[in-house]
Structures are given as C-alpha cells and as structure tokens.
Image (cartoon, rainbow, N blue to C red; front, side):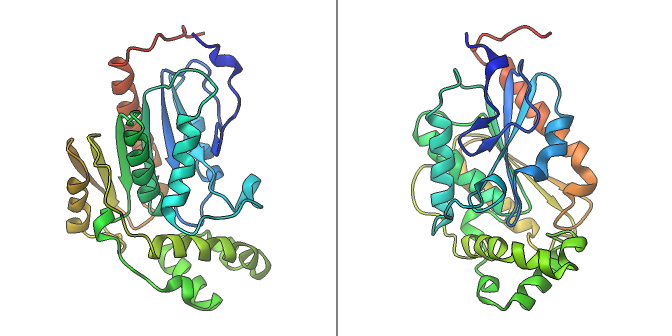
Length: 267
C-alpha cells in the first residue's frame, strides 16, 4: 500500500486544492468555460476526510497560463485522461467525474478515454449542458469583445466585478474566447460507449439546457441515468453547492464500499 500522506498536490493537470491523505475515493472536478481549478476550492475544503476532491486545470490559465490550448475539446480530454492513467502516486482510487457546462463534455470525453483504457470511472455527474450529441453550435467565439462580454453577462458565467473592470476582463477574454471556441465547435466522434452510471443536474431556469436535452444523456451509457433539477439558472451551483457536494460525496462513498483496494486507517 502506498503512503497516502506523501502524495503530491498535482496529478498532471489535476490540483489537490485541499488534500485528504486518508481518502478512500476521489471526485474529479472539471470547470466551466472560462473557469479554472480554483473555482472549486470551497468544494474541496467541504469534502469529508474520506473523499478527496481534485480539480482539473485546463491549459492557458493560472499556473498553466503558458501552456498551449488544444485545437479541439477532445484534445483537452485526451491529455487529462493520460495524466490519470499514467500515474506515479499509487493505485487508483474509485473515481467520480463531475463537470459543469463545458466541463460536462470534458468530463464525458475523459470518461470515454478512461473506459477505453480499462479504467472506467465509477460514476459520471454532468451539469448544465445538453447531451453531447445535442450540443448547440454557436458563433460567440467569433464575435467582438463587446459581444463576448454581453454573453458572459447573460449567462452569469463571470463575476460582475471582473466584467466591470476593463483591464481585468481584457486579460481574461482570450481564455474565455478560446473556451467558447472549444465548446461551440465540439462534436462527439464515434467511439467508446460508457457503461458508467450517469447523473444529470441542471437548473430549472437555465436557458443553456432544456429537459429534453438533459434526457439525451441517457443515450451515452449502457448504465443507469438519473436526472435531477435544481431551482436556479445556469449557475444554480452557487446557491446549491452543498447539495451538489453531498451528492458527489454519496456517489464516491458508494463506490468505495465496493472497491477491492485496501484502505489506510483514519487519523
């Protein structure tokens, strides 16, 4: 058994924002477009001792600011999956994947690659995004800076204090535009089908996803698919974070109960 306490804070592009050295399962968090690993810092801090939350750090932001962004969303997912399968920090923990908005399809594409590698996640939880085959095309990434900022205001995807700060928003716009490009040009390719159970979360006033688009996630897996609706818009997560963290923790603990891995004792 490996020494869990000595694990590094990084697994490739994944960040251990609040390490849980005695974790029995883990949740991998995939940020929304324009988001970064630090968005999930409060989530990681709220995790119980036996479940560790790690957040993906996409290229082009925070400590990966100088890293080039792949031309396609599948390239982002392929690199993340490679980080998880080419590990050096001990045996794999039972793993739940969670992604919101653009992060939902990044998580899905990562799950496909882990499944193809023989290491499928124990659960996939997606939020605020239509099923992959129903992804909406768009041209926001081709618009002017003003049009892009207006879209950010409409979706409430960026805090107002950033949007109202001209110098700050100009620094963020290239990253945000690049993520819109990844999202709006994404089309799922034929390939691995999931057997992993899928849970779909979305806000009842979210203009970015309708009920029938959420239902479409049933088509990506041979496993069970459950839908859950929250009050709120595209970022219902802000108001319902505790409920979502609890759901993810429950999924992860359920996975750990059926795992054959030997666990370190709690402190």
